[in-house]
Length: 214
Image 1 (cartoon, rainbow, N blue to C red):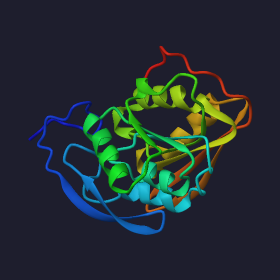
Image 2 (image 1 turned 45 degrees about the vertical axis):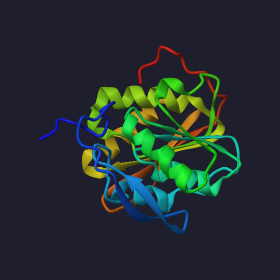
Image 3 (image 1 turned 120 degrees about the vertical axis):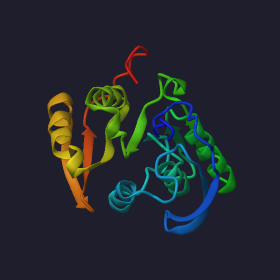
């Protein structure tokens, strides 16, 4: 059995490309997925809950899908906001290739699928949407959020979906304790055993350090 995780940078498992039909931004579309990425056979339940409960994408500016996988969140943002620039960020090179394939097949020209260090330091985001990789461990997860949430524009929101039995309530408490002052944290929805958390930035954005952990 392969030791790959969906957060492996270069999966060693067979690519095993496949085409699936999913609903994105209200329309049924065909997308390409593969082995060695998160939820290759469908939109996973957590992402589905997030997509059902997050507001429409801001119409312009830079938007971030953090931990994009094959791209359901990034593609939805790009469809909803064709004049925006959507950053699909993942450490998994295979996942990034799939986002690019899917954006091309859907004629979406506003998607940048990149590794974390390839996002310019001076870019800040009008929204962050994420089904974060909880299984990387608490230390890595906290480092990830500490890197990206401060890059929200002022009066902008991050929307995160986390499974209740994988620590959504403790993550909400950590977010509320870690991002203050200038932020607020609320649970906005529940469904299928998942919580949707909203982190609101009220103050001015702070440029992230280039040496911050991924």
